[in-house]
Length: 340
Ligand code: SF4
Image (cartoon, rainbow, N blue to C red; front, side):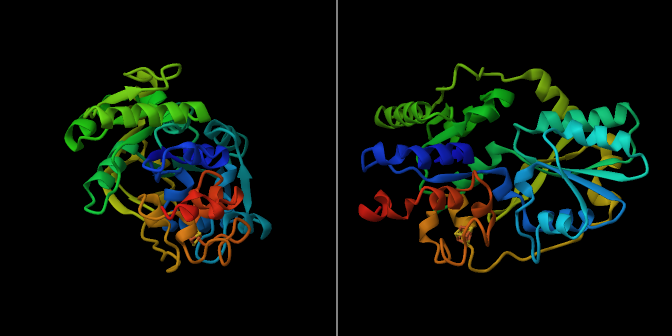
């Protein structure tokens, strides 16, 4: 299983899986931040962004994720002040420029984006920017890998861990997982050659009966990661249970603001903590995110669900497995031809 949606995208785009022997099957993991953000968080974002006193800031990829009835782009079309930013610090700067408005940043992502988001809250606190807040939906990779491996239906025999996550976090957290579940874990980059080498190292370990953490992405990743970034994340966030879209709640798998920074929590500031939402019943993205199904096995794929009219998040995000299969027409690939 490649963990990261960026790796999935590369694999499908360059046909890396089609170069592999038939005995090696790549399954696509839960590492697309847009895909695993729970539907109720999207609903909360839409509710907050619809308020006239709010400037709602987000990375562009969250704007088209469908909520129950609409998406953030529709809120913008209806007159809501929804803005695309390229850094959470841009949202803090907007808050400073508009002291009469509430400015909310939608903080979605894995360990990769956590340091910048932590920095935004830290700066808002230091500069007393009290009209800034953050809608937090941060998730962590190692607990998700453990949840997948603990499932009785898991087919995963090895992982390509996400290189950029490990650039921040290092890979010591993966060592007990490899040991406990007897799975090779190879920290892997995103270019086609990185992925092929990651698969090679993983299969080599399996053939030699080893289950270790190896670092294919040594040009960017060190074992202990970026300790200054980790310290900042720990200062601003605490580890908590988080719901993953399509997967459910995983203990200790997410980040929430610490008590000291709780006043920057948009959920409490706008009183949306209790909101809930139901997934479209025909969407099987949960099974895809756990590696149990491939996108083209969904009955809605390419018909009722397309990137223009997505039913589920894995069709919205450019890193989502369904979008990657649709874009590169993988409905006619080896999975069908070889009956994998
Ligand atoms: S094709 Fe659409 S409906 Fe089917 S799993 Fe993917 S996102 Fe969900």
